[in-house]
Image 1 (cartoon, rainbow, N blue to C red):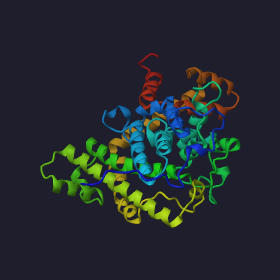
Image 2: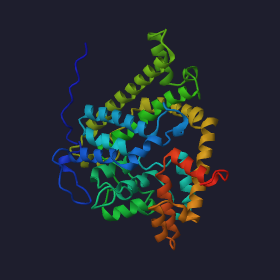
Image 3: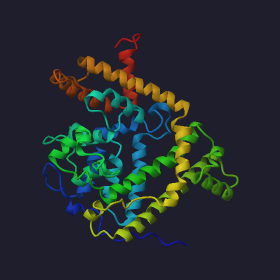
Image 4: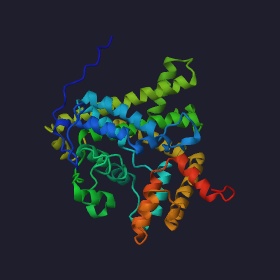
Length: 398
């Protein structure tokens, strides 16, 4: 019988909530929570986080109850990230916090909504979901009497926007970044030219693990491809055959669930092992050492990185570019584009308080466009569809 898991001691390079760089607006410490636990609670209680329940992951939220949404995806990412952080001796609370917040800037309809908003905002500074996350967390949430946003710790804000690596490099100067990054950097530098801490790096890879495997499950459930189609795909086909060999009479739903569970375990173990190898080689003595490295500590091994490429190509072709998904995304782009055009031209059709914000920006088209963009980006799929129906279906009076 296997021994019970015993968590390792805290790694010397783990983020320490007791040594946080603090918050932009000074607050008294909590008597019951660490700084990172407090950040997590603020995210969970935010309006933007709740709206993730009806925002597209791949399928528009109303397509079915069992498909992933941004909210369920974020919860699954947090579970994976917390497990990995625990094994590596990192701060579990920060890893979970970053996982829960990583998609908070996404507009309705996923990448189709982002593409449409970016096109609509082309003359006004564009749209980037990562920059929008920073706006949500530092400006758009209005819950506290003494500041806008959630006033999160430096480490949480850094991890949310730098989880995929440095934003500033030799080929991408600060001037090329979205306005939100540049404006916030003037208030508080998040050191955009360095890697994020180890917890953010783990959360980013947990995101990859979650969507790779859960998209397999959702794609099979939607009938976009079959189990037989996966048999020639490395990693996925190997694991499905392994489960079928062990359980010859297993029913289809159990087969899919067990195969996905094993695939997640395979990626998690590889991430833990590769992180350990890189940490042993780099030997960072602090979280600052991790930020200053030339490469991230969190990564998949070369073997897994190569073997997952065919799977990602398969999902891209058979799922993300399936004609059923393309039709949904085409509708989504039209909805977002038409809503933006109407609200920009007729800001009096916006509800309060957005109408009041747009009114003050009547002489500044760029500012008015950003107000409209913020309003649409905060919509859920179902709300955007309903608002569009009310405004553009001439057979239905408002």
